[in-house]
Image (cartoon, rainbow, N blue to C red):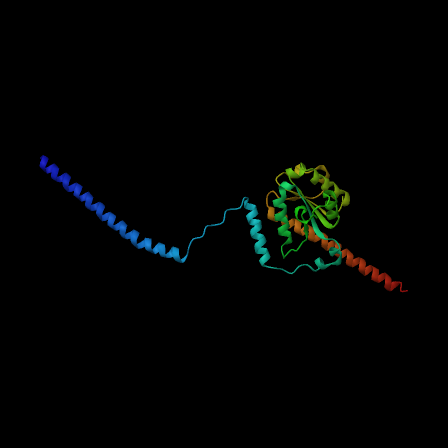
Length: 244
């Protein structure tokens, strides 16, 4: 009886060895065949490392929009060639905290792309080196058609931002030239001085907010140029009615 069990054990062990050898042979064949195929594909189409993801998802969407919009150049409105617009150096003065510099630069890039062609003032880029900060900011402020205040928690704690805000309010308190844009805070926390103005909310959809800013500046420039034309026509009419 023991001999029979021993024979059965030996035969079972031999069967397992044969099965392992057969499976190993099959796996070796698969590795040899498909391994060569994969290596061949890798040589033809090498895989490049993907770029690192951006720090903020909305920045990616805005940057993508900027590049796609820039590729499809459109005809600019005729009033952007007006002499009255050219009388000032900038279309939009961007007032922001130093800690919000990246967001201000993204907005400026959006507005300055070829199919929009607005002229933006950024302190860190456009201020003359060696000039007094207050003088340079006041000069640029008065040399701009519209003024955007990028209101954030950092803005409210920045003395220079508050200084610029009060200068803007003194230059055009009831005009359509002031554009408060709220970011990373609720509108209800706007400074009291700005609560009587319509503001742009950049919290939910930043790209849509950027477009609102663009349309607001464009609307103001259009109004200015139309007033210039109408005043020119009225002066011509007066000359024809009262010739020398």
